Image 1 (spheres, rainbow, N blue to C red):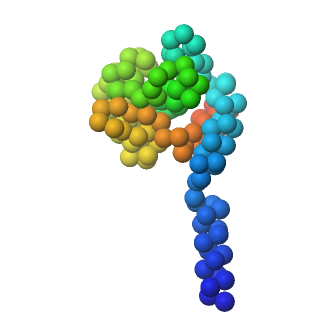
Image 2 (image 1 turned 90 degrees about the vertical axis):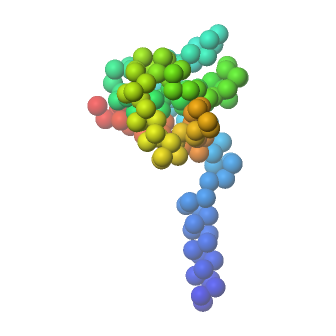
Image 3 (image 1 turned 120 degrees about the horizontal axis):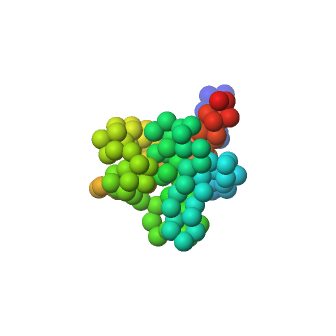
Length: 140
C-alpha cells in the first residue's frame, strides 16, 4: 500500500511540477497568440515595440521587452536574446536606476536569467508571464 501511495505522489509531482522540453515548447507555441496583442517585433531591426505601453508598469514593460527579444531570437530576427542594463534602459526609455531593482527581482524569481552583465528571458516562464500580462490588461 505504501509503495502504491509513493508511486501516486511521484506521478502527481511529475504531472504538476516537472516541466519537460515538450511542455516548454508547447507553452511558447501557445503564447505567440497572446503576445500578438502585446508586442510587435520589427523585421529589419529586431526592435521590440510594446503596444499600449502606457498601460503597463515598469516591471511588465521589462518582461514584455525581454520576452519579445526571446521570441525575436527564436524567430531568427535577432542573433541573441540577451541584453545588458544599458540596452534595456535605452529601449524602454527608462533610467537604469529605475529598472535596476525590477531586473534584480526578476532574476531572483528566475523569470530572467543573468550571465555576467547580460539578461535573457527564462523560456520556462514564457506561457505563464504572457498569460499573466494579458489578463492584467484585459482586467482594466
